[in-house]
Image (cartoon, rainbow, N blue to C red):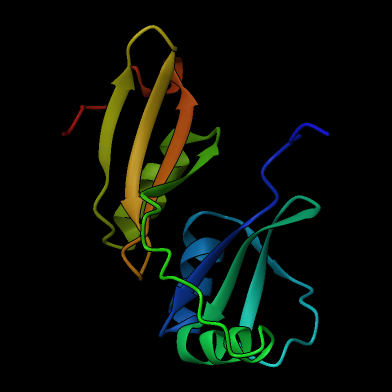
Length: 142
């Protein structure tokens, strides 16, 4: 059976509330239902799907190792960024500026995309992809 779509990403954090506030307050996603796992966390929704799972670092790693019969997983620190398709670039720029969040802008040759790069409170790079026409008047950085 072929893969059909990306289900979610898990962001480990030492600061649950700041991480939730970034994805909800800055990116405009919604905090929603999360099953009663034995570690603190949030499920952040894009529409009907919980696309960003957030978990408190130490509690999650402890719970994960307990459910795997003591087998240690390897660190998975190789993920570079999380990308979202988006609209409403001017609104996002205002939201980022209002919160003092640095952003880098770039146009993608041949793809009609204006990209905005920011970092969440844990240093995870977030890529926001807008239609190029929305960024026609935006100064490019980086």
